[in-house]
Structures are given as structure tokens and as C-alpha cells.
Length: 262
Length: 291
Image 1 (spheres, each protein chain N blue to C red):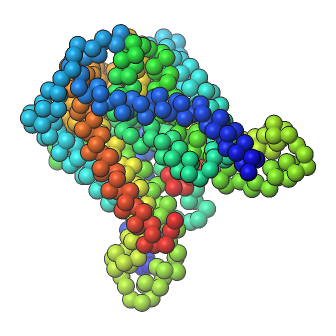
Image 2: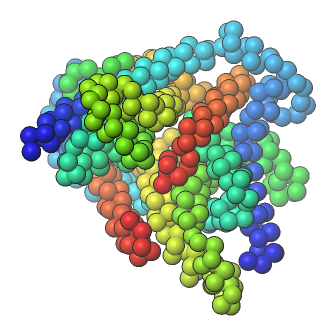
Image 3: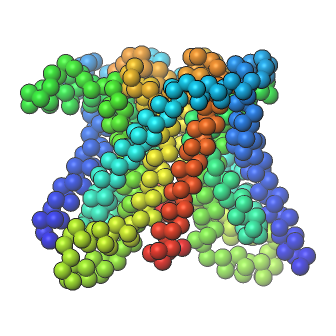
């Protein structure tokens, strides 16, 4: 390939990264700016972080979202891991049927999935509530956990398991000593992924949260819609840091882009 | 074999909780959408229904609002997907074939970060850039190209920009996965046989990257066509898409039956598109000898 061609591609590539990260960088920069509106004059300060952690209205919504994401994540990981284990015993025919259905909640546009659930919950008389919101979020993260834990089974070497069985280990012992350690990276990755997706699942929460209750995505949506709060920049920076750390952790566990989007 | 029967029973038992959840909260609600489409007006939070009607469907096809917005949304979906493809090819090529191998992981990780960041925050960060007296408008004002006190926010163009920003990473990742698999020798061979970069792209790189391109199209076109948050936040009064029409039936107009009917028709249209892309995908995979 010619040198000049490579140079052009490199320039486009760098520009693409600039486009992706410029808005994020501006937000982080502004979170340290004493000046409330706009960029200039720039004066370094931790003012908005202090405000955020002491008297911000964003804090209750953040705590609610954390509680929701942690509880959804725990339940999904337990159910998802058990099912991924079960999938190994199912004959191919049933799997061919189960697998597409297990991916349905992330294939269907979330708008349609959420309003279908809202209609169902209204129909059975529950309506918008914490229970509705919990199950709505659970169903959109379950596919990720199933995918990641079942993916571990597909990649792993299964001989130690057979060896343990042949040496007389009971099924439960095989699970605890052999299968579980092998699955662990998949389970942790599934947990991280489901936590993050649930924490950010605006659409589900927007339609299913009880009236008057705001999770963090709903709170941010309202703020962006009606007016701007400078401590939002500080919160956004913390959240971006959080997602960066989760991406780093996933990478350490062996989940590269190939596994996530392949 | 009794042993394998036992295994199947155990497997089914373990899969049961997930299956039950998927059935109750995904499959059943989607099927019930057909039933809800015939409801007259709202379903109360207590489950009360005013009556049944076929008006919802006649309204969709007699009134031009839905048809117009559906075409507009598909148009925006296609434009956003196309621009993403055009930006993603050189970027993915650069990461896979020009950057040093030890940097691949880092470069790809950087692309994934937006995927793990809240969608609303990404929209907000673009709004900050685009707003009047923001970075972009100040720059354009400095170059005397536009008045810095104005802004392209609250227009269809703003919706398209925001959507490209949000979905570009998905496209880069999908195309990267395909390009990375192309053997370097194929490209050298094409060059040494005298093909320029354009010919090499058309005859070697493009067909070989087809599976990634198609899965990228799937991941971008479907959600973009159904988006409602972006038009609501940056679209202004003319920025409505079909998703906004559906959303308004549930949040402002409160005509859930009509909303269900629109969603149902929308879902059918989207499913047809997904079906076509899937058929193309399996064909592309077969033609390059993949699975």
C-alpha cells in the first residue's frame, strides 16, 4: 500500500477519535471550571464536585439507580448463570429454538419492548411500579449475561470436567471445583455488563418507573430538556470514568470487541 | 439412553427460570401488542378497558402523519447508517491494518467506551458542543461562516449529527472485526498484480468485510429508525420521528390503543428489514467461506 494512502487513512482515523472524544473531553474540562456558563474564562475549581456530593438534587436519583442496577445485576447473574449451565445439557434442536428467543429483548427496539411491557403491566393491574421497572430492566440485561456465560462454555476446555466426573466427583462438587472457576470470568463480565446496561437503560425506566420517581437517566433527561445544571458536568465526568473502568476490567477478563460484537 | 434423558430433564429445569422470564416479559407482551392495538383509548393502571375498536388501524392508514413520519425515520436511518459506514471504513482499516499490532487492543477499547456510557449523557455532550456560543459555533463564527449566537440545535440536522455520534462506534467495531480477518497477503497479491487502492477495495476488501458491514447495518439502522429520545431533545418542533409519535401516545396524548397499533405496524416494518439483512448476511458469510 502506498505511503500517501496510509497517511490519509491515518489522518481520518485520528479525526474519528477526535470526533468521538472531543465532546466527552469538553464535559470533563467544564466540570472543573469555576465559571458556570460556557467555557471562558477558565478557572480551575472542584466547586461542582463539592456541590454534587453535598446538596445536589442529582444525588437521590443516583442512589436509586445504583440500587436498581445492583439488584437487577445480582438476580440476572444468578438466573443467567444457572440457565447457561442448563443450555449445555439441552439437545441442539431445543437450543436452536431457545437461543433466538433469549436474544429477542436486545434485537427488538427498546421503545417497542418497553411500551409492550407497560401495556401488559397496566392490563394486569400493576401499572408503573418498582416491580414493573425491576422486571423490565431485568429482561433487557438477561440476554447479555446468557451470551457471556454461555460463551465461556463454548471457549473452555471441557476435559477437566470429564476427568473430575470419571474420578468419581458428585455433580455438585464438579460444579464448585471445576465449572464455577472456569465460568468466573464470564460471570464477572456478565455482571459488569448487566450493571452498566441497567444503570443506563433510560427507555425502560422512563416508561415503567412509578409516577414521580426519577432514576438517574430520567433525571438527566429532564435536566437536559428543561435547563442545564453545572453539577451535571461533574456527575457526567464521574460516570464516564466509571464506564472507562468497566471497559478496562472487561478487557482484562478477556472480553474484547470481538466477543461483544462479533 | 436413560442417561441422556436425565441430562435433558436437568437442562430444561435449569433453563426454566430464564425461559419463564423471557416468555412473560418479552414474548407475551410483544404478542399482546396485537390485542392492545384494538383497544379504544387507554388502559387504566387498574386494567380497565373502555372498549374495542378497529379505528386505530384505519387512523394509521387514512391519516398521512404515520406514513410521512415512517418514511422520514427510515430516511434518517439510512442517511445515518450510510455516513457511519463512510467514516467507519477508513477508521476500521486504520485500526486493523495500519496501527501497530500492540495498539489494537487499546484503540478498540477506546471505541467501546461510548457504548458503556449513558445515551442521554452522549446526547448532552454533543448538545454542549453544538449550542449557541458553544465550541462549534464559536469556531464557525471565528471563520466568519456563521453567526456564533445561532445554533443548528433543534433541527433535523442536529438529530442526524447526534445519531451519527451515538452509533458510529458500533459500526467501527463491526467493520473492524471483519477487516481484521482479511489476510494481508490477499491485499499484497492484489497490489502486486497491479490493482490500485480503489480496485483493491472494491474487489477484495469490500466483499470480504460484507458480514461485518451487514451486522453493523443491523446494529445501527434498527435503533436509529426507532429513536425517540434524540428527536425529543435536539429535534425541535420539526424534528419528530415515528418514535416520537409512539412516545407521545403514552406520555402526552394518552391514546395507548393507537400507540400500540403504531408500534405494532412499526415492529412489522422493522422485522421485514431485519429479515432482509439477515438473509443477506448468511449469503455473504457463505460466499466468503465462513460459517
